[in-house]
Image 1 (cartoon, rainbow, N blue to C red):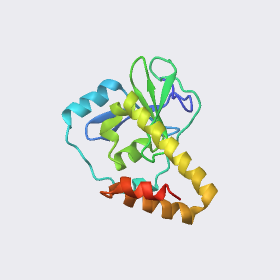
Image 2 (image 1 turned 45 degrees about the vertical axis):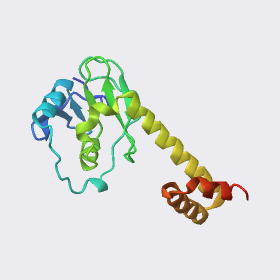
Image 3 (image 1 turned 135 degrees about the vertical axis):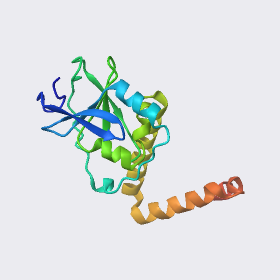
Length: 177
């Protein structure tokens, strides 16, 4: 096996979570989880919601270069996680294993997304991530145009209006400006 990031062959077995076996690269700290190990862990622990402290201070070691599967040497596919994680998970489309750069597993556990990894690879999840990105870009552009204070005020008004029972009438009134 060869590490997809640093290309060393120095892995050691580790337990990432209760009964979840993985291999950790001793040089870069990344983790390889075989697909069957993940699914076996999910079957054994359907209700595990561990409390994780200190995850918010961690920075993901997300590397963007193309990576090869450490098992079958095919190119890994990248899937954006979203949910304010700022990184992508790499998966082999052939053997279905997952590569996590340093600290990514811990961040997923901290956000309680570690038991939903299989959803991250779905078209629905990836569509949501793209939509989150579009919305964030739209908000950044509006902030640049109108300033932080006016944007904050408009966002508060938008949230209030969204829940108002007569929002249609209020929008009609506002559109007369």
